[in-house]
Image (cartoon, rainbow, N blue to C red):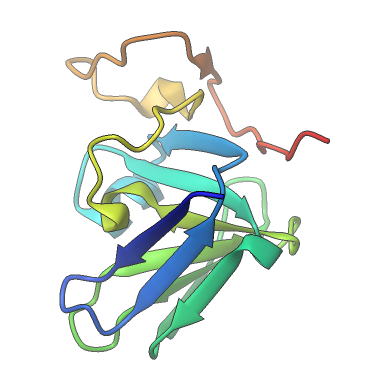
Length: 140
């Protein structure tokens, strides 16, 4: 089973994943744009049992557009958001694709909040597009 390592900028907070993500997505919502300082956020979804965390994190909880809690874990030293949980899916964790620093990471299969996507940003390949949110679920 493939193992991947995601870290914050300073390396203090680390996530190790086993196997492939069950979904890779990008989010264009305004909150993710603010949180990342970028035009979108990319996340790989893994079952919690396939993820190990090492290091200290601080939490930031916000409510999504659908009224659901999202708990973001970031490094208290450098501020990098490395992973987060969705209140409605306690069995899974999202890990920031950029924290893997791996250009070979699988591409996104879902793009959410397309209505807030920057008009100059084009995503190539087959991708499911949603004007609002969608929750990727693991397949059996």
